[in-house]
Image (cartoon, rainbow, N blue to C red; front, side, top):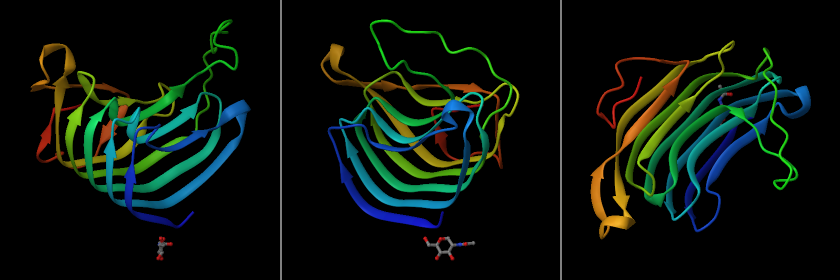
Length: 176
Ligand SMILES: *[C@@H]1O[C@H](CO)[C@@H](O)[C@H](O)[C@H]1NC(C)=O
């Protein structure tokens, strides 16, 4: 609650994540988080929020602003279906659950740079508790394709159950 983090330089590594929330049906209470001015280079994630199915509580009023990305694998990602196994050699599938940590008022503003994967924006929200008031503004991410002599091509996005607020001005790749 009430976290302000600025002037972060990060990478290689995991990047900036809020989560995982709601593990083992737990309750999360996350609010008023600002990440302002960061440069991420070669990280797995850029601006990320993640939760397990089956949690409760909320994560709200979160802002990621003025962030530059350099070959980040998931530059912008909300994942409400996070699922990983303690034992990767013997993964158990995560079963569907109806409750979820509620995500709302999440802003991504002025986020620019390159993605190391084609899919630069991933909003994968819960079927039963969709994330809402998601704002994307002044986002420009291109795909830096290592397989093709580092050629820059357009990136793509994925959107499941995310309700955007406003018109999402100036967003490339377009989403939702
Ligand atoms: C949000 O957090 C900041 C500190 O990062 C604080 O100054 C501000 O008052 C908080 N806002 C609310 C509405 O609590």
